[in-house]
Length: 267
Image (cartoon, rainbow, N blue to C red; front, side, top):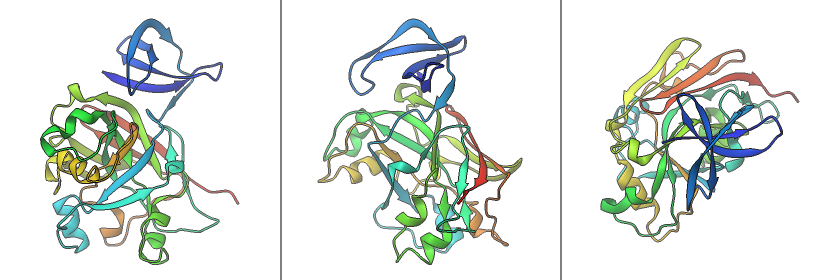
C-alpha cells in the first residue's frame, strides 16, 4: 500500500491510500487499527507522509561513502539526531540558512524507515515486524556547521528548518520485503550526482533497528534515516553545494521521487 498525508481545500489533514485512479481516505490510527474507505479525497497539498515522533539518523553507513570521505568503517552504527522541526514536504523549498549563514549546504539521498509499533530490545530477526513502511528522505546538511562550527556535534548542521524533506509516499513493508535491495539516487537540476543501491549499507535495516532499540524505546512514528551512498557534494572536487534556483530530486526504487526546489532564507 502507498500511503500519503494530505491537506484538502478546506485545510483538513488526513491520510489516504494512493491508487492509480486517485487517493482514498484512511480512517483510524495509522499506528494501530485503520482501514481504507471508498471515499475519494481531493488533495490540495501533498505533505510529508508522517510527522516524526523522532528523527534518528545513521551516518557513514555505506562503504563507498565512507571511502570517499576517508573515514574508517565504524564498529557500531553512528547515530545522530535531527530536529523534527526540520521536516519539509514534497515540492516545498529547501531553504539555505542566512541568519546562521551556510554556504556549504549538501544533499544526501536516504531510505527512511518508519516505526509502526512501540518497541525496545528487539532482535535483528524480528526487527522488521515493527516497521510500518518506508519513504524517501533528503538528509540536507550544512557542512560548515556540521564540520567546523558545531562543536564536534553534527546536530546543528543537520537541523536547520526544511533540512529533512520526506516523501512522496509511505510504502508499507509488505511491498518492500527486502529494504536492502533498492536503487536510490540524487539528481540536482538534471545532473545525477548519486546513484547506488541500499545493498551497500554497512549495517542493514534490521541491524540498525536492533541497535537503536537496545535499552531504548522507539515510539510509533519514529523515522530512521539509514545513511547515504557516495557522491555527496562535500567529497567532490571542487565541492558541489546546493544553490538558489536549483531543484533536488531523491528517487528510490518502489517508492518514487521526492523533489524540492532550493531558495535562500529571507532575513
